[in-house]
Image (cartoon, rainbow, N blue to C red; front, side):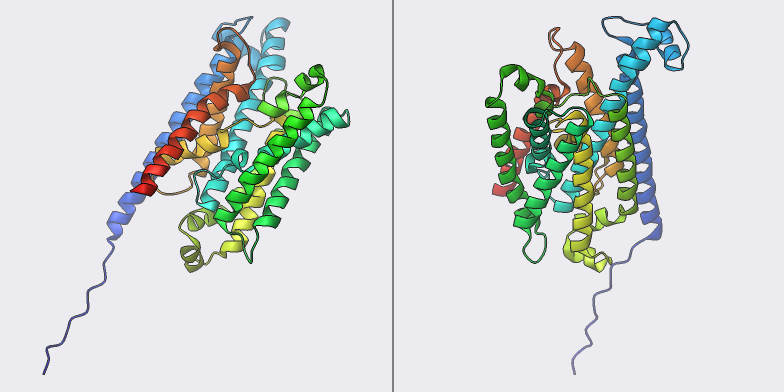
Length: 353
């Protein structure tokens, strides 16, 4: 007679520990969001104050609410405030799109500028500007069509009975090179002065965004962000992998397609107005995930990080490059390129280990 074997006791989860963990996460989230809000407020105030016609903080804030002489009102409300809003909205849009790409494809290198979505938008805008002589919203519409076209082509070539993340990234990198080559060919085949006018669509800038373009950016981002919020529960599940997502009742393929479609639309709207601000979609979500460190996609923190990053970059672009004003995308590129090299180096070390 053999002694009965006792089955291992299932691990128990202490409800109090779970509540304590959630409370710590909520406190950390509130702290990070509070710090980001304070940083954005400080950067926005600085952007209102400094410039060729510097204003005291009190006069700048008063002019923001319509109080002051005509000169102060013109400087604050017509020149500086639209630029600040454009920087905040564009930074938030690129960061949200990058966070969606990276969490859905589970790849920290999956961002719209590396996948060619931003390159397609630039190609569409430059084609409308130099090829058809369009301007304003016509160029913005061309950028939207370019981004959507590249995204559809990536989908077409990457789809094999489903959307595989690695295949999607590799096909996207290929289309990124293709879009860059076509863009360089277009710029090289036109007059130098015409090529200079297309500069904003190759590097990105928030300097001249105001009026209808600002409304397009704000309205489009608001609608798409609400759609993302409605599907936000999918992100945590997709970040765990398809099997875990299915176990949580999420249809992985459908959720991935809908999420990536929303991300492409956000990139298209942002790029159609400000051009491709390099590396914001890559860097901001990574910083956000590091700040929270809870294994989630950190969508809300990524939005705040992207807004602060672009606003700070635009301040440097205006006043910090040895007295020379530069497009905002130049500064975001200078910030993002070293980060990309660091990411590749650390990824290679992790792979070897």
